Each structure stands twice: as C-alpha cells, then as structure tokens.
Length: 612
Image (cartoon, rainbow, N blue to C red; front, side, top):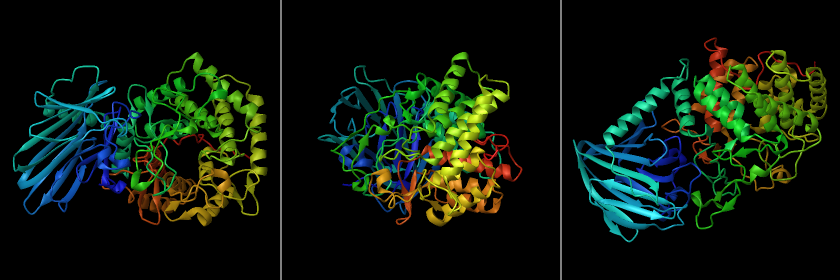
C-alpha cells in the first residue's frame, strides 16, 4: 500500500546526527541514521510500506489524533483517542554520543482500552537491501551490509517472511516500550538500555539547550520551535547544518524537481549565522563558522555551492529507480549535481558570514584572514567576467544574474568595513573604487527603468524573488524608489498573497531547463515581510508574518515550498531555509517595535548608498 501522507502529517525527531519523520498514524516512514546522508533504513515516504517502515498505531484508523512536542524539546507525544479509550505514544531519538543510535517509542494507556498494531519492516539502503533477520534473546536483529538494527519490546512479535507484526491491547496504566538501535553490523549488537533513564537524559539535554534561547519577544513559540528544528538539523560532530533531512520530496507533486537536500549550502551561511545569533545560540554559530572555514579551505576558484556533512566536495547525483517517489513523483535522487555549479553569489554570502563572525567577536587565526583575502581577490578579478547559475541553481546556460552581482558587491563592501573597523588589512582604496564601479554597472545593466525594478539578469525583463534581499544588503537604502519599485513589481508579477514565486518558470524554460510547476518558495514570503519592515510598512510585515505562521503544521514545521492549487506543503521537509527566514523575520519585526536588536544578516550597521 502507498505510504504517502501529506507532509503536514509528519513530525521530526532527531539526535543531531540523523533524523526520522513520524506520521499521525504512528508510522516512521523515513529514517536516516547514523548520519543524515546515510542510506535510509525506512523509505516508505518515497514509495510504499515494502520500502521500509515501522508503525505503532491504533487498529481503528478513525481514532482521534492530537500531538505536540514535550515542552521546548524534540520529544514527540501523540495522543490517540476512541470511544473505548485513550493512549499516548512518545517518540524520540536519544542524544547518545557517536554510536550506537537509538529510537525509543513508549506507548502508555491513559484511559479505557485500545487495540494497537505494530508492523516492523526494516529495509536498508533506501529499501534496496532486504536484511538478514534473526531473533536472539528476545531481540529482533536485522543486518545488511554495514548496517544493523536491533528491536527490543515487551510484546511478542510474529514473523511473516520479512515482516514482524503484532496486535495487542493497551489498558489504562500499562506501558509498552519499544527501543530500536542502529549499530555497525561488524560489531556485536549493543546491550539493552533503560528507556526511562535515557529518555529523561534526552529530555534534560533538550531542555538545557533550549534554555539558552535569549529571545523573549512576540512570536517566541515560533522562534523557539524553529530554533529547535535547526538544532535537530545540525550535525554535531562537525557543526554543519543540513538544508533538510530528506531527499526528493517534490517541489511539485508528480513533477521532476526532486532534489537531495541532506547537505550544507553556503548560500544559507549568512542567514544561518544571523538566525543562530538572533536566537542566542552562539556556540552553534561558532561551530558552524568552524565548519564553514574548513569546508571552503583551498583555492577560492574551487569554492562550491554545497558540501557534505564533514566538508566533502564530491556529491555525485544518481537516481534510485526502484522507488516510486513521494506520491509518484519521480525520479528519486541521491546526491546533488549542483555541487559542480559555479554560483557567484555564494562568495558574497561567505565573506558576509565571516565578517559577521568577526563582528560578533569570534576567534580567528592568520589562515582565516588569508582565506578571506583570497576570496575577496577572486571576486575582484572575476565578478563581471564570469556568468553563473544563480541562487536557484538553474540548469540552463549561465547568465549574469543581478542578485549574484549584488552579492559580489556585498563581498567587497564587507571587506571594506572590516578594514575600516581596524580588524583586517587590505587595499581599501582600491576596493572603494571597485565597489563604486560595481554599483554603477549593476544600476545600469540590472535595473529596468521601464518597470522601475531590478530584473533577474542583465538584459532581461523578468523578475526574481531573490531581488527582495537587496534591501537587506545595504546596496541601496530602504527609502530608495528603486527598492520600492522592485517590491511593487514583484508584488504584481510573482505574489499570490501570502505566497511569492521564485520566478516565472513558465516564461523561462531556457533558464532552468526543467518543466514548469514550481511551488511558492516559503523563504521568499519571509523576505517580502522583511522588505515591508525595512521600508517602514510594519503593519504589512506583521500581517504577512502571522499569515505565514498559519502555514506551519500542527507541530510548528514548514517545508521548502507551498502548493497553491492543492493548499499543502511541498518540497523537502522540514526545511532549514524556511525556519531560518522565520527566525530572522521575527527578530526584525521585534526590532521594528523597539523590543530587540537583531543581527541583520549581511546588512551593514548603516546602509551604503550604491549611488555614492
């Protein structure tokens, strides 16, 4: 049977190394462990139950369901209720160091009596490897290749070929534990753990972490849940933060825009830094900065768009043809070919993020400054002579994207400010002249006077939502009519309130070389909110932000995009970029009301008028 449920039906659990998605039916339909980029143990989300799944849920499919996280933690509690009784299922991945990795599920009867079932179908390597199954000392052990799973529970499970299942009743006061543990298959299965003790430790770990959040203004619940989501998407050993814990959840149902997001994008660098610092999580910001500097070390000409969890550079893309795809959306891809693209904007994002790290007093070393100067020198030499693929990773011919040019300007502008602050040495007079030359070219070739707006690329007339971010860079002051004109044009051409399309893909087949049907990219709506606030239209900003909050599912999660026709979340889930944008918009709104001082991404302390 198909395992697909709307993305709104899923909640995230994780251990800062891997992650799982748990549905309202009590099914774990996606599990990547021990690391985010590992071959999934449960892949039903991208196919069918036979591709790997584990359900603990009521037999009565009409049972009422309510759920939420336990306080400011990543421990999920799901309540199932029928006329016969009520039970609670608690799900968590334990914070347990490097290995082994544990998922605990605790079913508790609260009232009356309910009939439950469990179905356990382990499948390794995205459903392609049927494991060798055995039972030892009451535990079920599954092994295939490098992976091993051991399942322990207090109820008796029956084996039917490669499936274990059971039907059982849970009564008021009863507690039925399930512990699933991943381990390297060349080692002996790990011994049993004390579920209650370990769950208490994990709850305390999350509670201590979330207590460091410094934000106490409006929208705190949304900010806190987004911060918890970002922490769950962090790879603690290296400080990396993945874009999402999933692959190939389609941007359009039934479409081919299905990408693997279990990697780390440099484009998110400044937003990541800003969100972590805005929320008070300096340790994570420092860890991310350390990952960033290690990942990009080397020749600036070889700077990539994205890297692996430890800074891996080769992320070859291939298709898993045995999986039917989420709601028949094929192909299912692993790896991401965008790693080989040249995207000029990331140079500005990186320099801005590193400058922000310096501004916040993070420790640096001599190699840091050499690397920063190398990146700035590369931008100075190539900003106007190399077209690129743009921030949306177009798969058509390279172009001179306006946002990329503005971010090149940001790289030089950030370097100038570091020198003028006395923390960096460089040819600042030369850079001043270069910055002026860049400004002049962007304003001449990237602005369409007929529309009164910046356009997607030099010589084009099409708009692009990335242009909303210009107001945050300081390239022009928010009061400049070219800023308001761009916002007005985007409202007219790309907005179906509260949604903002990235660009008109139907009008640009030669640019992205993919079929039309892209959803509304949720981060773009937050950028529109930011533009309103910076332009002084605070009420519009608040109204839009509140509308965007209503799009979150019942446990506060957002995906990458939104399907306007079907009215549902689409794209990889949950999406770091959406939650980063949420945090930063909330802080900007709080700042606008005089209640907080946000870290405003790559915006300088005072806007630099690009007209000089």
